[in-house]
Length: 260
Image (cartoon, rainbow, N blue to C red; front, side, top):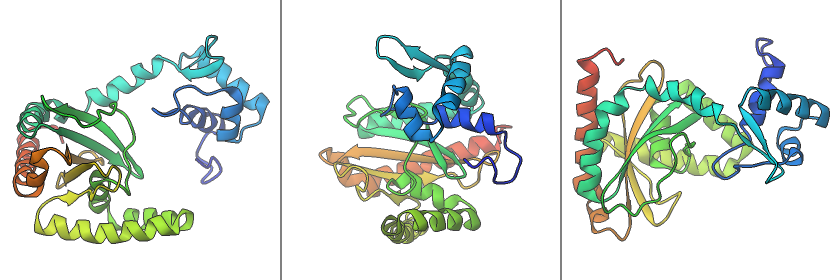
């Protein structure tokens, strides 16, 4: 974040959020030194902010680990976000039915700007696919869900993302542009995007986006199967059409309710 970008952001708040943003599923606890390295904040500033965040319950210092960990009050803040996404409850029974049929996993990713987050998942009875946590970020460049999301973004936003990625990682940007061309063709011809095993070679996925955003947020449904599952050979011929039907059914609920 750049607190000086347009003069509208409060620098102390930006710095506090930057500290909380350092934590992830892969970085669940961090020392003061690690937080200084990740945020670039000087030690006095960092510890004033961590003291405030701990006082608010958003951060906690673990004496056992001698490190900071996310505070449980963050769960209180995330609960209203999920609660307002009522479409999850409408979609879940159909998601479970398809997940059980294929013995895999159905996910929903919701995104805004350059962020895409997992907000719901359904695991089939025989699912062997890794189960991520709700709230985890999803790759825009290396997943079918991410590419379907990018294709639903307004062109100006998509091009801005690609331009920024080109500055940071030209090789990855070039590969993503090729994948987006393939994904656009797949979406036009088949109604879904494919993962090509870019993130996990042992897992194949397809993704179907909602036709329109909901309150400015873009939703994508995805189906994933391990390559050794016999159904993975039917991902495009059987599972794909079923996932499309699920998404169109959900859109029917949207059209008949006030969810949008």
